[in-house]
Length: 271
Image (tube, rainbow, N blue to C red):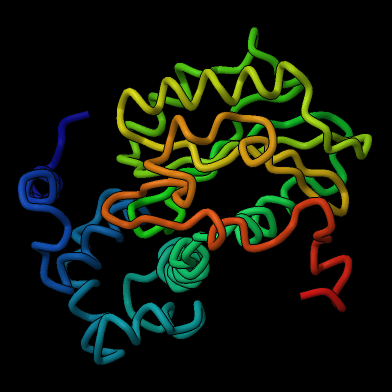
């Protein structure tokens, strides 16, 4: 079917707007252009420029558009159910972004903060799972990813993948954690070997492995504190790690005794 002249004009306009985004970023768009771009995905063949202008004129600002209900949005000519759903869902996306941003803004500079964060991810699991947590030089978490399911051993531990992820995320520090579903926090020889391999691989890129935690239902154990030659990563007996320009003392990082510590969610009477 031959494309109409009006349809061709709209398509060319859309292409130009997309090219601007690719060249200069979405932040280069005016408010009405940003709305226009969003509406491309719910209104595939109509000129969305007048609808975007009408939305801002009706509600007074981009913020008010995003906070409007679906019924309110559909009062504007050209806005159907699909567009109303798209626009009204954006504020929920922002809420979730803000929620996760607060989590990542936490400073994970002690072993108890890291253990309390990762513990919840193991609840109810009947098999071992290995996580890699990555941090910036302020010890804000920038990623927490599953590396493997099943027994953690030197044969199947994806050390190369861990290093690639740390480099890709521009991490300044890393922590490993895996669970022992049957409650024994004693590390196996394989657990210790994996810890050594990753610590040595990351050291080559000047990314310290701060710890490798074994987590059970109510407690954790810090492998490097008890079973690894920590002096390979530190300057002296009083330093546990160097992250960016910040030095953390051994005493400050290990703020709790993992042999007696219990997770506060299960044991709220303990600090």
